[in-house]
Length: 613
Image 1: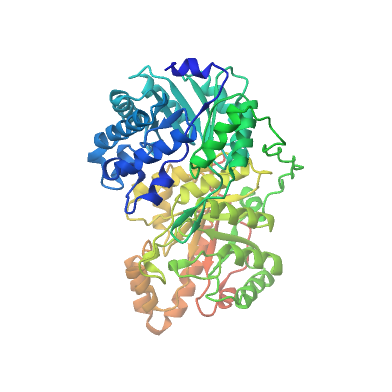
Image 2 (image 1 turned 135 degrees about the vertical axis):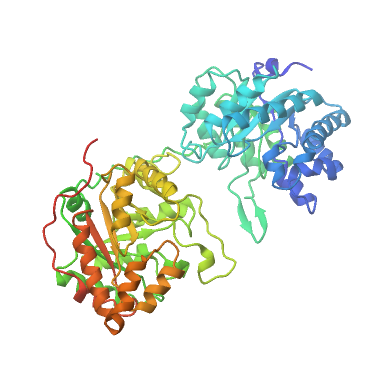
């Protein structure tokens, strides 16, 4: 059998096999992962390899894509790593022997997932040793979405083996990886590495793979295209792939060959039928008919970013004292009480903003973002919606934010949010793909004109991102560290936890250097009863009512309501010397009463915010 490198240079593409995992999952019941079939259902693995060889594959991959310690550990199979990898190579070789055909055995290595280079490197090297030691002819490093991770994997494999390496990334329809790396950039980096070929696999389907390799050409290196059959969907608990016809894959093969692909095959959802069509197209020299290539997306006339600052940003930048009223969105779909309070705030002239909670206490309410859109549209009051990553994926958060921005909502307070266990649905779990720091990073990236993964969006946003800070936190060291990280992530202002005296605020400011790095707005809640005050101190996480404040309420007896108002006014007056503004929590059942409580707005003293670079 000619060597792999020689075959790559022959001018006739190598036909690779198709997807292993999806087919094995459907054929073998009860698999914890497809790689388990190597030790539990060996005959099914051999049969699938033989199916691809008989369809015309010149190269088959070992059933080891997810056979690494981190992924096997998720299924309690990490102790069987060597057995699974060894069996994967042995079964592929057995299928080759049974077929009587000369085919290449590619040791499949997939990404390990999260982890630092110092942990990834030895694991990739370990897999390379095992695969080569059992008889693999080359390595297929595939379905990587992080270019740096793929580069680490290539170097780790090369440190222990001289077998040929094919390096594959997965691209979307815009020819970018999930991490926002373009196919052209990826090719420039991979061309500097010691790999035999590189290209695209998995991804959004044949058209996306063709688009990616079209951009990757020109390096002089052989290209590879092994796409999914198309985008998968769910039907109940089953993964369902499109019904791509063999003729469609024949056209894909013809166009991939015309683009210079030296390895052509398939990935998830592709069966021997599609591989047979690729074989026929290669053998018969089928010419491209039409084009599966997606046209470049028409350039959208860039929308000029909103240059004018929000009112909140302008006032804070100018050192004006800001006042906001904090509202809870309704438990139902009727926003009238919320809108009435916002109108009353506007008409009073005592506050400039309303800030709207996002499902406080993890109880399902009207969306704080949507409520803010309604307030701004129907009352003209600028809002500061809170947003928590508890209930949405990163994609969901991006969608909410882009929609809010389109409606003119630009102040956003990124908060972690109350734990789901406190809410309406026992046993519910938070999403938390990112925390409040990650959400702040997302807002900053959108303002740069890119999504969370670094991919370009149509136009930069102009959000004014804020964060929460708690001067009464149990672990002040952690709170200070997180506050600094939030500022580094792009926070432009902060809103504190509700405070009942200002000693903690002064102390916190001293511990971070004596000056606020960003404007700080302090929470004030004029609680009117001793019972509620005591309950808040004892039952609400993160809130602390100093003993001297509790004693003041006790001494007041039936005058507790007045004491609550007096304390609130004292705090507002004191905050003027320490921070940039206040937000006042409206009473739960009578939110309009907050207007009576608020003092008239007055010019502020010089804002104690550090203004250096």
